[in-house]
Amino acid sequence: MKHISKKKRGNKRFHKRKSNEKNMRSPLTITLIVLILFAILIVFSVFNGPINKQEINDIEPADETGIINEEINEQIPESMESSSIRTNRAISSGDISKCENDGECRISFIFDKAKKSGNTGDCNEIENIEVRDNCKDNVLLSNSIQTGDKSLCNQIQDVSIRTLCGGI
Image (cartoon, rainbow, N blue to C red; front, side):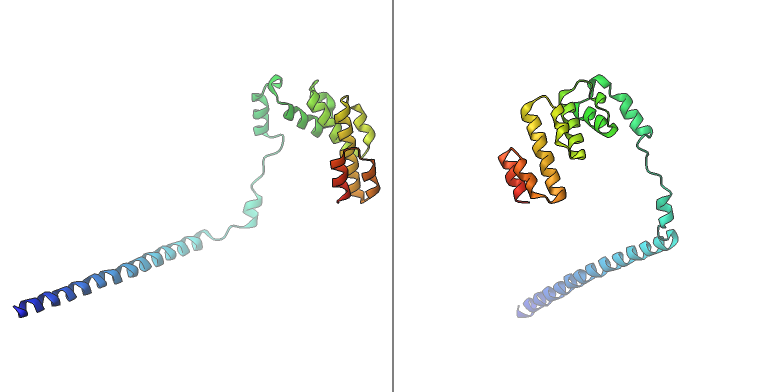
């Protein structure tokens, strides 16, 4: 009986050795597969070659007035345009008539005009007193930042904007 039990122990060792051999084969096969894929990648890159800058430059970007923009513009009826679309059109063209009696668009157009010119007098076209004062304060803040003149901060009426201006 002892002899039989020894054979069983020996068989277990033999089985463990086979499972270790299978485990050793698995990393080897994975490594070989990765190497083969890497070799295929190299072969394809040699035949196709690198991308030249000339090939990239040959692709022409779409023009702002291109076909795609025209199709989009045709799909949106002018009566359904949002205030932001009218504002963008008015500011980009420099024509306030593109606002089409939209109050928000007019205010944004005048505010942008005043900020670009740096003239607080442009804000006087805004009818609402609070919005007009806000426009003037922001123009003064912008001028102070651009010129570095801190004395402009004293002319700002809004306390929070004046504080912001003084801290810059």
